[in-house]
Image (tube, rainbow, N blue to C red; front, top):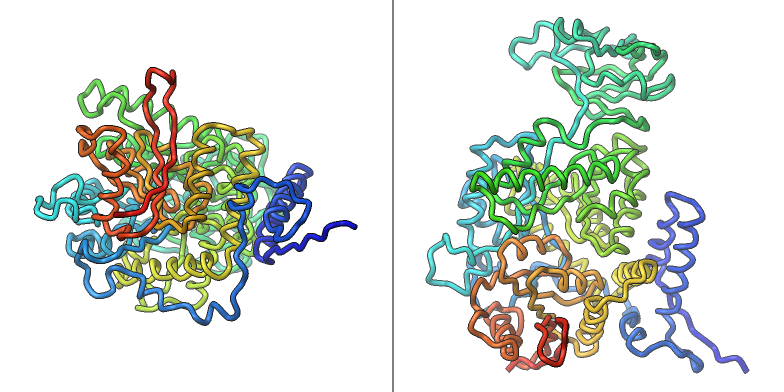
Length: 620
């Protein structure tokens, strides 16, 4: 008699695994088969002959679906600590969302009163768009962010607003990148002139200095990329001003240093001076950084930004080039007294927004500290119908690598003008959470929109609703993300101490229904590993270094606390109890709840190396 095995595998988890084949190839098929096997094994509910390890069974535990549970969910706003007031109070239980919000700060959100409300409403990372921001604007935004109280202010309620522990929010510098643009229009003295290009008309793309100096016309446009004729062939498309005008290439002049490209306009439209140019499907050799990017990155290091979002990354070499440049800047700034030796460099978040970026994604991910799915330019570079598929593929690969991923562009675009989002926008944010995104991003909605505070609150509430549903009603999406990381570890043969204790902590948290996982960390590697296992509870990471704390902010579930020197006089044996006391003061746990505490402890006489430990405690 063969023992029977009942398999439960959610359709959404299966669908997400299927997306691993988007780039095709035998390797991806093997990965899908292996992942599907892992997923199937993890969903085994009953088997009289199973020899699977009990801990692994717990890690992959599958909750059954409850009937019509989605209709019974409470209003997500009821989870929010700001539902009645935007002031902090240590008497109120805090239920933070696991996925984070990156918000772009601009003219409508940079003033202190608005900034305070945005911070209070759930922004975890402030994005500075260096395509537009001036030095004066950047300094104002940095100053006001530091003046905005975060929940950390409850530790020092009587301290001044400049206290370093009042707010732990990260800052992301988004570079302009090596963009292609048209030249200045002929006779455009004001910078606001436009020319009309008629459908069916012939337009010649030229890269010579003569056309650049004389100005572009409707029949001949200057392009600031001398090799444009080397990466285009007849039949390819050229998009001007984000696709406002589409040109079809009919003839390419080869054999010249500045060969021309002849096109026919597909539609009628207007074009301004220095409009953006996209070459869908073309591979260029643009540098990883423009001259402006180099200036901006070095300046960003002087104001201590935490992340650099590198635009239009095409290959791994571009990431390495940026990291090497930051090392060089650190040496120069140290000599000038503007940088402390040993301070962590900004982490590099590679923006994927081109065909080359997609083609070289695996090697880019390996070199990067994180990924941004930049759907704006990506939707111009590839067929727009494929953007969602590419998003799911990239998020899945980041989950497998245990690296943070941001989904960006037009997530709540209508709220730039309206106080409520569209249903499709809500579904977009929700599905990004289901996909496994660590962060979702707001751009123009908070930078120049009419409702910057409301849009952050709305996004926070959408995240809360999605996470509550996946935790209590449909665990498939989160389990799929976890399975991807477990499979990725197997592929990498990762059997390190951090991985083992992180896995144990997540298992213990789920078995004990813990309220929080508390981690004491100096470098941040341990909470990152725990986050990669996708626990359904927050990770409270106590860090002695403010920079390390801020650079944990992009990771799902991690809520860093900069403890400064508060543990200096506390013995290692007593630090877990002290951390639980702080977690209670922070509003994260309450009396009687279970807490999992993970620490790295220094070597002693009996042990020659540092070791990691995991403890389970009940809040007194």
